[in-house]
Image (cartoon, rainbow, N blue to C red):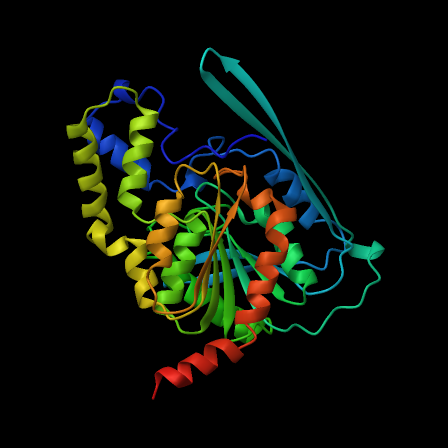
Length: 359
């Protein structure tokens, strides 16, 4: 499968641009992916989008007004029912040897189909909760349609969200959570008041979306349960890594300047955006899922987050999966995700522990 282009693989001919290189890097870092057409590509997104818009679809596209400047966040609401979903994944490995060096390449593939519209005669189910699904950086809500359907078939009203600056949502730049959490609060309230969404919700986030999910939970007790797939801890470190990878031979001074400019523009210290800080604040149960081959969401990162014991914490490693493909390892992640929400989002776990904490 094609890999989602990471944050800064979008700087061709950067050194030919006029002005300070550091200023240009910082500007590109903050620029909304939706303002960079053709840059962020995935072979599945457009196909999934077409499927979700088929005639007679039971899905609802809802543009939620946010803020005071006419902005909106687009969501896709999937009502709970049996969609005859078939979502499978396979992987193959190829081992090559050169002297004492062994290289193992892993090729993943997925298949996905479901029934909706006039072909689906299954009744709608009474929802047992509302779960939000948040995509990664550069992605769109439709990319996680298979996961959304898996959750909806389990009886939950599922809301896929285009985060600020992504897909069909408003926003000229990303906010590393500073604006996105406010958006999510307004979306939750709107869906609750206008589309029968539950007031208390669960959330599943992937990569950048997992960072948004953790921040949201830390700031809103109405988020009762979190599944964080491929989370990272320090956004600054991730950004530095991407800059080094995108611009070969770039000096440390230029990277430092670029990171400092971004920090100034978002208006907060990078340390305030460390996920371990938010995890330590949040009392909600959190499940962390990473791929064995993930170089961003490493085991060290998961250990750092799991050690923040202000609530129930659990972690899961998916063998062979990497950062970009983790969301498509349906066979391995389906049951752990559904079991987690069944255990921690019925309300009983969170409310019980909230009561105990009050004594």
